[in-house]
Image 1 (cartoon, protein in one colour):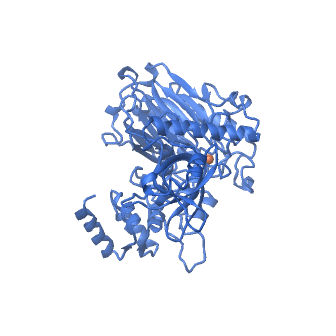
Image 2 (cartoon, helix red, strand yellow; image 1 turned 90 degrees about the vertical axis):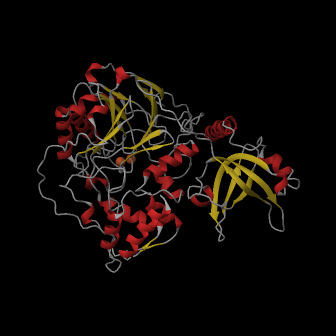
Image 3 (spheres, protein in one colour; image 1 turned 180 degrees about the vertical axis):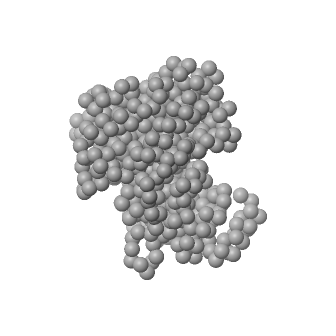
Length: 540
Ligand SMILES: [Fe+2]
Ligand SMILES: [Fe+2]
């Protein structure tokens, strides 16, 4: 955005009595295509100061740039507010009185940029399925969970990402081991004699001066590091955004040896290289599309059954639906049983097998030409440690014609490489990086791509299975990267990869309401595998 445009925005904000605090807040506002919803949300919530955090909070109350508007029957944003600070209530939203919904047919908005039938020319029934699985842990988990397995997993991660750093020429010089650098710390104690190390990060804290302190560890030893913000750093730079525990990074710098313990002053930090990706495409004769959804949460009282019927009706009647060859369900198909304390009172179906039975019945409504792929998530009946294997064969029996795979799954559809990951680690990215919030899961996905790892942190909120090879490393850059789990919705692009945060079929839960989180349910994301055109179809 040019300065003039920002000045105009600032004028509008000032006229609305709003004050923007800090560069990060300004940048966040500059990224919005329109600020009227932000102004409205702030005024409704009696917010005057727009810090970055306040902007993020306001944006949870309005539809984001990338999602299409909900149809007029669900005016969510108009009724959303933050809590009144005086009220002592943790619940800030005033929800509309819910009457019995009358199902209107799905909105068909042909000819729009995001919904142009000409972009989706093939009939799915005329094209044979072509699914190639590159990675799926099902039946291949070899860990016994011993200390040795944990060591090999981390050692493999270090090796894989170090190779990416070296092969991608991301380092200014050949890296040396931490112990070699430490042995020669006197020699490497000035800017003229910098060295480069590569290792696993263990984050300590930000000091009062705003410096990030962390340890970096390789096979030989651990070295304490200090990272200052370089001039002109973007808010995504690790000095401002932070690092995740167990990230693999390169650091260049020198030792500072004074009265206190020596430490390594980092002048440059190196992440694995991620250039502009050139996407593979299905041939013109296979220009079918894939639909993405996750978090259906069948069995929950907040599962949106009427909207599901609307989607099934769309599949039966809409011309665009005839192009949908694949339907990828990226985890949390059911709500599960015993996933969190007190879950039972939120369940409409209390038996796990009955939940899977109901999901199978709901999916039966899809037309015959649609091939289903089903991954597990953290609510499913498989081990929670990732990589997770596919659902149990006993559960699979209830489904005719579905391909069950593990989580994550790296696969190709007609040569288009897709990485689908349920997204549990987004919880860790929200806790670990300043840029990531629950309302911006795409920034967690961006962070995963930039560090080439789906779930780096051991001992955080994501249980990990220490396989001898760390298959949570993103070894091949996908053409389409899909996650779910946090019940948002996003379709966009990061350095050439199509990024899809697939939508949920569960309405706002009590827990989400308490946190002030507004999900974006009932949006089917459709991607044309030939042109990579995308469409987001709302059924709410
Ligand atoms: Fe979920
Ligand atoms: Fe989940």
